Figure 1 (cartoon, rainbow, N blue to C red):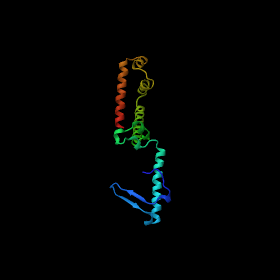
Figure 2 (cartoon, rainbow, N blue to C red; figure 1 turned 45 degrees about the horizontal axis):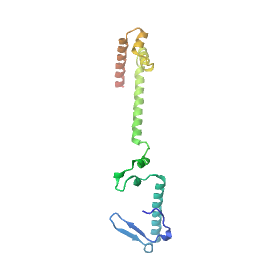
Figure 3 (spheres, one colour; figure 1 turned 90 degrees about the vertical axis):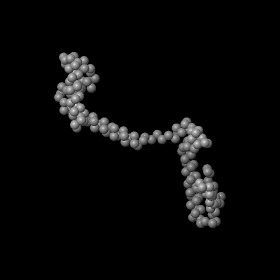
Length: 165
């Protein structure tokens, strides 16, 4: 394929080759000036588009494959052609996951608010203050097993409320 434009006065005829092996030659004297103007415009557009593509893409797909097709694929060059735009499907899935996570947190907060004040305080000490069962038990003057039983009861209560919401 040509990579340059011939001046309009040097464009004497147009030969088009088809995949079937046939070719057609169009001579300006035998067709109208409209056809010739259209052919000039189309040829110029194709050459300009090819030029822009080569200018903008530092590596073309053709440069990445070997002469025998894909057997000599150049991975160093192909990385420049990688599409780094985020996948729209992944963005939708992330948004859904984030929305579901937010909804679950809201339901959990609502379920916690239905607990008794002592149970809410115990949840706060375990999850927000990051205190151990032994530490909480020593503070309240009970055994560590008592704290475990209370937490087990709270978890069962929250599970029941979260599954019925």
